[in-house]
Image (tube, rainbow, N blue to C red; front, side, top):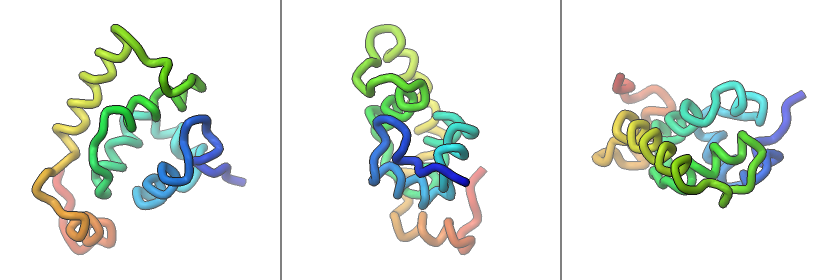
Length: 110
């Protein structure tokens, strides 16, 4: 039996829908992937990068309030976010191209 992504503290229906678009259909799968791989999958499937969305995910997987991220920890997460964004977010791709990629029409960049 799988648990909805939205059952994780701080992750609501919109985050759950983004995860479904990325092929992450349960809280268990999200936890298995971890924050960095999950966020990379979200970017690959058309989610626009936003630092708050990333650190909310990190805090959620740690069972912490979303606004608990501060100081040095937040600075370190920003470095991780920037690296993920640089690797997986293609500013030139449209949502339409991302949809074609999801169904296998466009070769994935590696």
